[in-house]
Length: 126
Image (cartoon, rainbow, N blue to C red; front, side):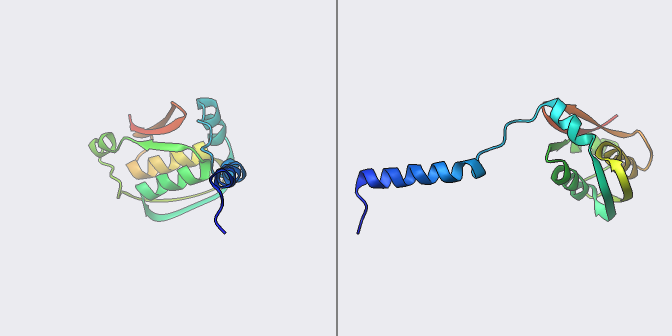
């Protein structure tokens, strides 16, 4: 038996109300939210010869934050998406793990860094 137009409308609206909370977009993060995420301790990080792009995806997944990489600037510093990274850390803040990943990718400390702005982590060359 087909539903009447009004009944179909009620069924659709009812389904939207039931499923909307799980499917709604998350509120945009503030810089303070991102900094709090970076201050969380990660129990262990074991990256074995993975492309930097995959390592950045891992940071995004662990933090829940948007990670924006300036690949053009990194390329000028000699680092590409495919630059291989190996990093093993345990019980450190995500910020320290990220710094270690960037230092390993660059081949020396301080060449690459991150900046928190606009509710995202931006990876840049110094």
